[in-house]
Length: 461
Image 1: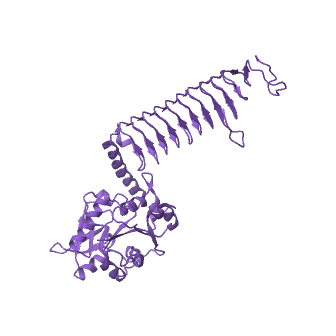
Image 2: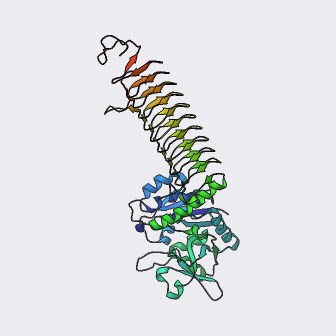
């Protein structure tokens, strides 16, 4: 049977107390609406129809071509929202699933069970239900003395006796498509808000003698709807547990999963160890056999195999195999540590490359620089890359030795195998194999051109 999915995403989300549309609030690093859209795409061969309202343009920009859109310009209830989809979908399928963009934990397996129940029963509607002592604002499923579903009563309109009912309507439905489109515009107006509630279709189906069935959800976390920041945090905790379990089952060790935070798009190789306080965000990819943490943040970065990062921040950077950082290091965007490179305590690298086997011990800053293989960067070395208007590059050749507290005033090049003395301020290129020291640094054994305005030297210095 053909199937269409309608996702309701037009709500005001006022209880979030935010300028950002509710469905765009991030969950494990991704806007929550994307979870609903991706789940819907697992059910049907056609993109879901997203009913948008507040922040419609922003939602379209995030979701893109993964969905088609219809706008509910005036929010007049869930029944009114589904009515906006009728013109686009009538006659196109035999079943219609209606779900919410603020239920990001709902699984495709649960929805498939809902769809299968409607298909086999032929009921006008099958709704997802749960039994819980915490109603969380859900409507109650009212049954008659024979146990047949009679109607749904919203919590605000329920009597004290009805509020005691533990069977709850999760608000997710699978409809017989033809029946839905014939009846969605017949939903009565509910006062005082002047809204049309989708739940009224249950009573309408019963009155018409059409079947109404339920599909119980096994894990009530799946139907955790997000209406407040508290709900957002609760959903984040559930999703974090799922993500951590997935990676542990894939061969990743977490010494304390409760303090390990991994966003949805992160990828991790087997035999990697994540220590407490590790936070992995964005499109981070980590190879196998790495050791990350404790208390380390990695964002949108790529790490090869057998890397180590300790008490450090890595963002927008690349670490090749067997490179290591920390403790208390900072790789900024554009940083690259080649195979076996090392950056130690309190170092910072930005838009710069440390070649294979290069070592940058501690308390140093390299910005807009290229460091050759096997070079050694002494403590306190700084590339002076910004002149107040433009950034300039520094080149350090293979096997070079940069003495402690060297200032490299870019643009400048230190040649292969060259050395600088401790405390030097290097303002001119240092040839291959030469030694430079002093303030400003002078090159030993290298005769400068006559008339050199800065040094006037002819050699030994």
